[in-house]
Image 1 (cartoon, rainbow, N blue to C red):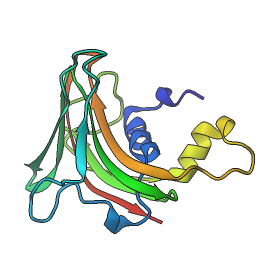
Image 2: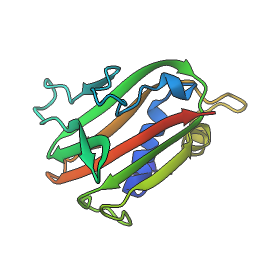
Image 3: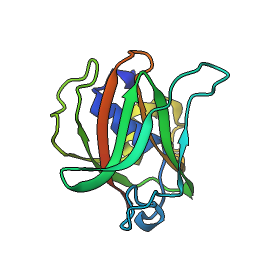
Image 4: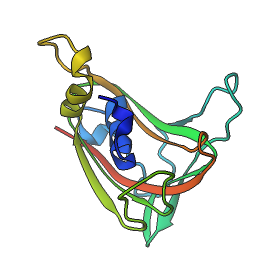
Length: 169
């Protein structure tokens, strides 16, 4: 099964879920802290300049419909927003997201409307990588949360928002 044949919102879910998360919700620093300051454990990771000079995707705290959220903007760019965490057993990852511009080749996402996602990380990993897990082996522990957005291959622009990212058992 090719995981990249999934719809864009499913790929976003897989990208968030498989790169990893923490064992308890309180150890995952909020994307948008109550005091409105930048979430310091989160860090930007771009494409290595030695490979290509690709502009960075923008990750910024902003307001949409009167609510604070993480705004993710691409313009022929690439980038990830990463939160490193200690190894933890997989749980359930939940978040809310919305798109303000259609994705190139994207289908089914309602523009300007908040969507709620909830994924069982272990079940998704087992489903997508069953042929790579030895029989009877446990799903690997997770080490980080990664939020990614890129449009370097298409040269397109997009604006998306993310909030209420939580990890539970």
